[in-house]
Amino acid sequence: MRPGDVYVLNAPYNGGTHLPDITVITPVFDDAPVPPGNQRDILFFVASRGHHADIGGTTPGSMPPDSRSIDEEGVVIDDELLVEAGRFREAEMRALLVSGRWPARDPDQNIADLRAQVAANETGARELRKLVADVGLDVVHAYMRHVQDNAEEQVRRVIDALRDGEFAYEMDDGSIIRVAIRIDRVARSAVIDFAGTSPQHRGNFNAPPAVAKAAVLYVFRTLVDDDIPPTPAA
Image (cartoon, rainbow, N blue to C red):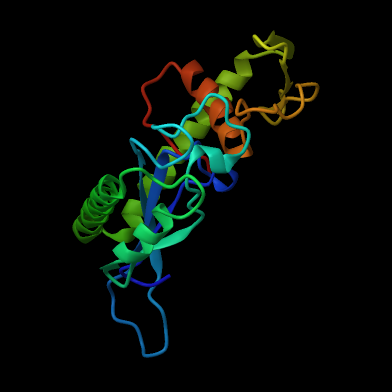
């Protein structure tokens, strides 16, 4: 990674959700001069996720109800370099968007949306740099840790009030989702176990690990009474 680089992905297998949700990630580097041959430190990452109107697939909108493979839902973007040293790689992205058996239907709109996401990230990076200039990097990092530590403690308080349980829910097609929760009172932690859930569905009603973890985190977030900011998992 170098200053001016930006990355893009939508692959559900590597942190994405479904293909229309495209994530753009920008590393934020230290602006301090470095000796020749050395690389600047990455201070932060900023990201934006946008739901694109279409990314290809067998139906407009990239959400075919009868899809059986990921390619039928559209173009998979798996950790591509979107901006290289400040240059927006438009030709390369257009080539990717029109690749595959069912390409994106309106690459012009995708490119415009991706440019907007890059700009959103740059705004976030600029504001972070301003904050560092005002109060110092150590203070910014400390308060970021405070936010995460507070969120952790709020969730542990929720866990303190929970008890062991097991639940099952049958879907319309007969598939069953089973979940068990086991509470460790000493560690103030919980284990969420989906053992016994039906195997992979032959269609598109499946959740990769990133989605399953996000769903679990969301449930715990809804159980927190206090008003806390959304916090990524450490």
